[in-house]
Length: 297
Image (tube, rainbow, N blue to C red):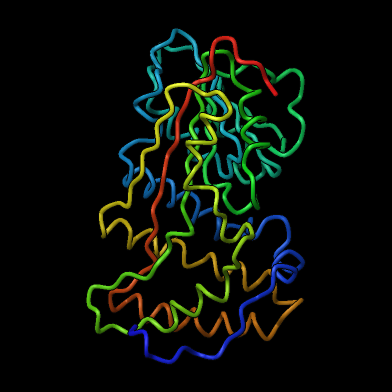
């Protein structure tokens, strides 16, 4: 879209409106979103080339692995199939709603689930018990400073254990097209209708997450930034078009007019996307190890 082109009429939501309408978790927990999470995992793996960073050793005789904010458990289930069967492995998925994973009877015997919020105190029996802790895409629930969450994650780790934190840099979001002649009015409008500066819908801390790791004493810190192949990025775009739909549903009672605006622009966005336009982002996986003599804060 050229800078001189006129944008559709809409008003940007206020911080209060987002907090009151969207609530503590801006996305959905239903079968549609379960499908999105599962597909998103495999697309994410295609973008980075791995589920667990090759910088994290997995050749121990025994491993205890945690996935925080496990959702459908797809990361743990995928990693389970990759680990050496001779390794004695214990896997634990944490979330505030563990029903998303499905019946425990259908899970591997060494995979268990436990209700816990990363914002809550770490239970005493979990402190210093994990070799590997993974967390991915909690960007929507941390409004400003990730340090308190990082400290909780570090408490879970054994000395020498590894943390893998995977995020999307929403600040980098932009519309990409196969041709400058394509119109993207609706995609631009949806982005502005559903993102608010300086809130959890547009967090600014992702770019410096590796520096936060270092400030908190982690060692061997690396940040793997990727954009992905364009066809994979397009698939991820289709996958994530359900997110503004979720936000629209969340604010429908508090602001039905704005929800209707989003709905209309989403339909236009689908047409624009079919012609060769998408939201593009930078993504990062930050890894680091807890020092052998780490003092938890």
